[in-house]
Image (cartoon, rainbow, N blue to C red; front, side):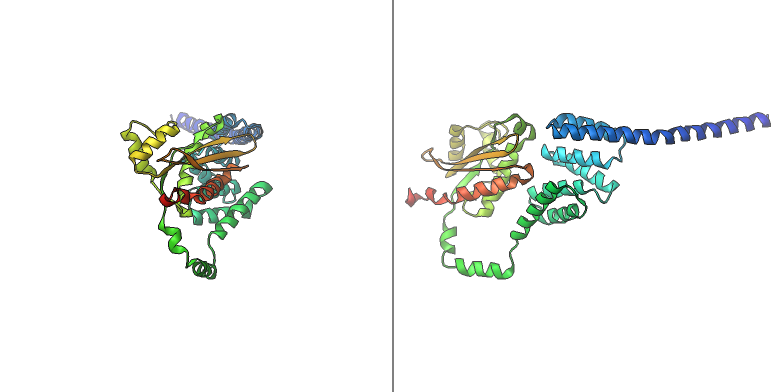
Length: 317
């Protein structure tokens, strides 16, 4: 009986050792399969086959969840789709595996920049520059960092600006037309997939407030007015309907626009439409080559429309 028990124990130990060796032997194979899938995804991404690339990358991380490159690429793809929740998950996973995950820092930095979280953006973009080799992304990161630094002028410059503008400050803030920004129409299949119309309209609200030439209705308030009229921001609002909503909300003008994601650029247009007359008093347009710089489009168009704000002033009509 003792011999039989001893034999069973030895057999169990040998089985465990064999299973461990088999599992250990499979690890390089799983890692290689995951890496091969990642290489395939890179090729698909370069061919602009983004959905296929994402599908392949999800398989890659399923096979090997420690595949840093695959998580970084997934973070980038979700970022391009404006799915910031998934962007954070994969970027943070990549960083937890490797503190040198430059691509993950880059994506988080760009995402926080677009969300207006400038300090976080600066920290993450600086970390990306520390480890990143990709020259195009290094340049994009530096450009954003330069813009963030420009937005924080030195105290002396601030004082000089206040002194220079002292005599005209009261005139500048005396009249700010009350406007609302509707969701931008998406004029291409890719822009629809990315949901960029809503993103750009939200950025326009922020940019217009920062520019200081308009009083801008908050999107939550606008949504309430739309719901009362059985409308929704998710649907396309035509000019006539926008004017009707604007009149009900007590607006002086509405801002409508469109955005297209083309092969080599992202282009947007916006119009400032007076409620009283229904006329387009001003138009703005801008484009960028990289979606990472989409906030620049909002900033430039807000400035262009801001220059025409006084056209809405009653005595100027």
